[in-house]
Length: 299
Image 1: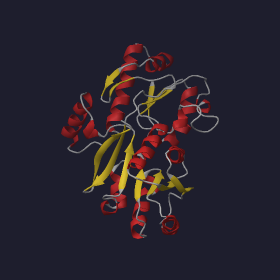
Image 2: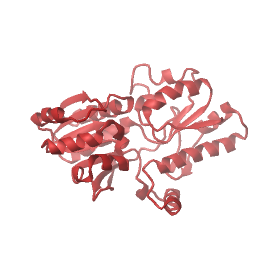
Image 3: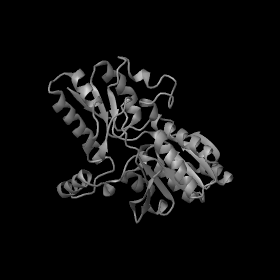
Image 4: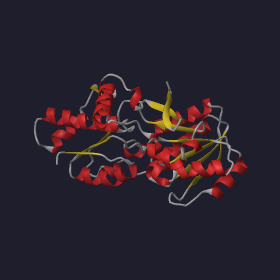
């Protein structure tokens, strides 16, 4: 094994990273966004050093991190006229991290935070929580978490519980399963989704070529992270080709040296922490039961 492409979830990365680092195996994620995985001072006090027991950087990611996503989401909320928000998270590495980023940036922008709390992602309903939030009258509820941790149920209970507020969620909910679990009627006109990158239909050049080929082969639309998985694989293949040897250290060095990579996501590089130089975050909503691109954020 010369390379590891993954993980999808930041919580899984937290477990895999130190093991792969000790093995000297390069890890390239198409989807992890928790800031502390790579950026000093943005996560727990021992991050990211705890994931680098060898002292070397062997982990890289294709997507911008949550410090960028949280800031973009807060600015978007401010643009919408939100003056008060209630922030929830699923108590996991990714969800809490992006929720904390949103809260900090929202407060800087003058948005009042009516509450900040973790939820049980396996609860059958959130009726009592909705009742409590309704008493605070927030204009927006921000949920840091994933579809698997019940974002759909939160949306349902907000509607049935009479909470007249927008719902904003991060890229962990940017999948069709979020719409089906919530019910499209509970998201129409009130759900807003940020994504660390551009959605498939907004990709150009090599990205559009990939999307067109995907549609032709599978007769369906690619999920948001399909192009990012494709990009991660191409980065690894390019690095192995440049390394010219089945040597893990040489492949790590080749990935780290990736500069001005001209791929499906445009032209970008890895920085010294293993982060992409891409800073694109998109804002999306739900219309007629489907995700619809609204705008690029922070542009």
